[in-house]
Image (cartoon, rainbow over the protein chains, first blue to last red):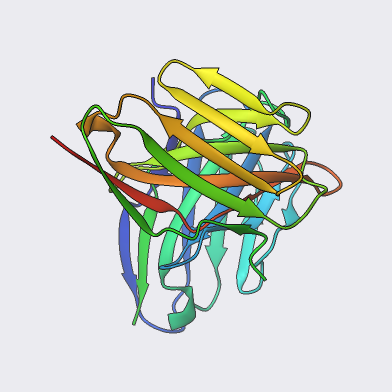
Length: 114
Length: 114
């Protein structure tokens, strides 16, 4: 029972490099989310998707792009990595939105930009 | 502008005693609130939630209290166990067009001493 799986778990990039973080969920959830967590701050929403083929901006979308080509996958891309994007990234999914539909999180990707 | 605040970065409690974690919010439009628990190197896991129309919700050892007039909620854990040692995030839900957005506090690290 995998739930939400994030790949990779750790990555070190140089400034200007690009990469894609993969999130996969096996719960047939409609909604998926990408967050970042920085020291002294709560999780902040980067982008989200309410269904296959849809994406929307969250609180801190600049410097990131996302795609949801398949219902079970949500990709987060960094086109030109910057040191300010050093963070722990969490993917989450939920069946629907609402009180009794909590978001389920993956274990995170720790990303360092040098 | 932090809409959800957890003013205590850490809390230490003896095993068997009560743990009280606090959370304040500023936006009266939040319609429900959640608590998540996070162990190191893992993603947050949902613990308990409460609708803005209630003032208390209980689930086993965990009870969440909501004081709307004070814009304050608290999580009570009774009795506390060493396995409860983790970071606890408070989150508030706000509707943002297509889905409910979760706004997280900065977290409180709970240490339960045997």
